Amino acid sequence: MFRKLVSLDEAKRILKQSFSPKPVGVERVSISEAHNRVLAEDVVAPTDVPPFSRSTVDGYAVRAVDTFGADEDRPVALKLCGSVRVGETPRVIVKKGSTAEIATGAPLPRGADAVVMSEYVVQKGNTVLIHCAVSKGENVMKAGSDIHEGAVALKRGQTLSSHEVGVLAALGLTQVDVHKKPRVAVISTGAEIVEPGKPLTPGKIYDINAHTLSAAVTECGGEPTNLGIVPDETSRLKATLMEALNSADVVVTSGGVSVGPTDVVPQVLNALGEPGVIVCGIAAKPGKPTTIAIADGKPVFSLPGHPTSSLLMFHLLVRPLILSMAGRQEETLVTVKAVASAKIFPARGRRTFVMVSLTRDKSGELLASPVALGLSGAITTLARADGFIEVEESQQFINAGDEVIVRLFKPVRVIY
Image (cartoon, rainbow, N blue to C red; front, top):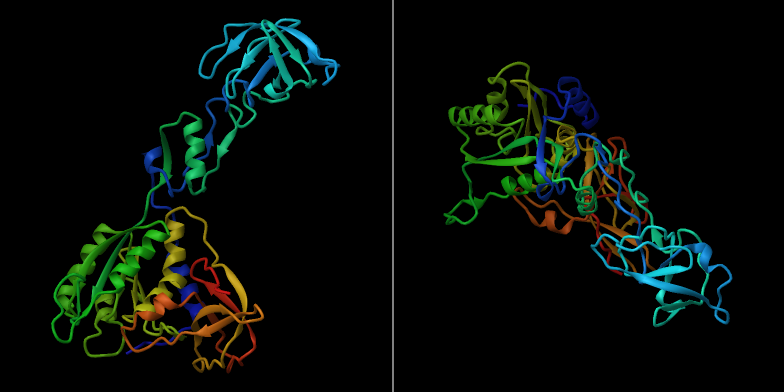
């Protein structure tokens, strides 16, 4: 039986008091493996980007002062002294009264300080007629104008997207220090579940939670290890949990935490070491059976077997902890305002989370429609729900037409 139901806020407080999540370490990876990793240290530019001043257009490199007064009707004549191509070191010097043809991206030759676009130039043999005056620096990207040598190009704690990986490459770096991914062991319990791909015998269902929870771990920066399905037997469960604690930083189980005769997870957790179970039941719907323990200095989250309940409790309790251990900033779920499409009755005395789908009515108003949780094992809620409404313990109901705040599981494209 449950010791005592605590509120969700109290469960979070107890967890925070019992375990302080910290990054689990630092490792050096190649930039080809750096995508979606979190920087452990500032990246200081070892060189200027770009490393040389270069032309941003096809045209003619000039001394800006030599073009003053040039216009469409009265061009300035300059002598062609050569050309500069992309990828080569300029061999010409632009002196007073001269110019050099230059390609986009090519280094600016010595003596030049601007580029005239080809559209404003007429070349006649070695004479170049300039029909447009330019100012110093015009059509030129100066050395270090993007990133200066010695400047902090990327900051510690940044998650490396394709853009940041491009910055690393532009700096000539091949490796970077990132936070290690926290290792998360995922365990499913129950005699009724089998691994997807295996034959289903009467009374069996496929294991949903191991795969949804493993994917959720990956989404928040962790490294999941699926330890498979364990029957509701004390000795087998204890052995698997001990294996998980030896190899992982966090353990997540699903099933076996209700009040049935085979729900033995809380008792087993208490046998793994002090302090053992710190939360055994939360005054929330769904998610009431959720159990949290600390064993061998590591957190163990035992989530309900119901797939939607399990994933919701993961988002509320486990995700913030894994984010911190991965060196990531805690993320706030995106919220949108909507109107309840039907009357909603929350569970009395419990924090209620109502799964909803989002649509728009003919007037364009955003509607939040409750998605039934269904019976134990129902999976359609996961696919149909765009987010959820959180209803406080003291609120008796939400009327149809009331404005509600929907917390999105992920960005959605609302159908008009």
